[in-house]
Image 1: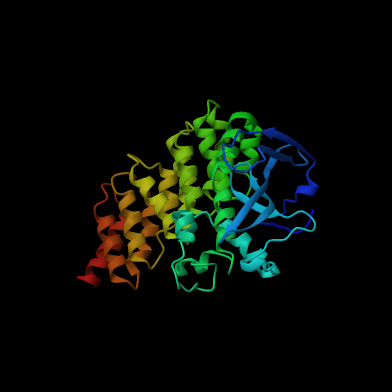
Image 2: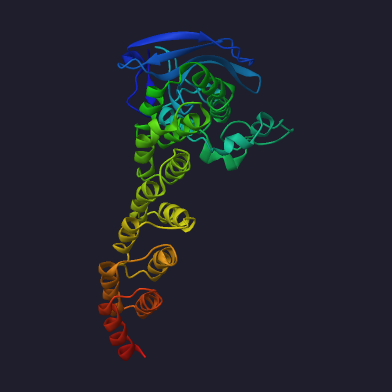
Length: 357
């Protein structure tokens, strides 16, 4: 095997074992087989397909001989070239090392603008006396940041192969033939948000008992990726957890520096009819910020949903001395409207009234 470019420690030559499956891709690539790579613990961890296709520019064609790799969830993983093979650019100039690295970056971008263009737009027919733009024939200049310089069609062709029917076939094959309880848990436990989301989706669509996945789903919820956290919460809602357990799982999201993740918790707690006392106490411990918005949101969550006990009320009284008058005032009215105020809180409210009004 020649050069290899991967986005993870996976290496095809280190696999414990491999197997091959035939797939009717119904495309122009002559090879209709997928190779499955298995890890040391005998889990399937990757697929590959050998690609032999012509890349033609201005009627000049060169066969591209490359192997593309995907994770079992369909996420692009990397590529390799056989020994002695190379990729070329316009006028068959060989790729440089940086070009190979750039190609891997391009193929790793699932949201590339290359997905919005046709081959005709990549290489529109030449007109007489037209001048090329120095990239590849009449390449659209706007694509310069999405392609290997002077290799627009190669970049375009390989990107569409990475995100086309082969990837769809891999996802379908995994779901139909490879999934198991232990494999789903193994995927969820990896620090790969894309694969975690896929595993949660597959588990949720299956007939498997969902509670067995609640622990790894909780790990994903607290993993720090917004999209994975959102998917994990949606999954945990289906796991028959009691309200207090689920609220307890959500509370740590309030500590996230990513406001989108913080907002997942806020929106979830807003839908709760009641907030248990232990959960309310955890919320109270977070009302110590000089951020008025956050203080206001958290107090709003508690209103009509929780009954702070005396200790919690006295802790809130400390914010009556906040340097931010909006925070002090918000806490004052929250405490004032509590139906069961402790005597000590009443004294603190009187002290605040004398100072502020």
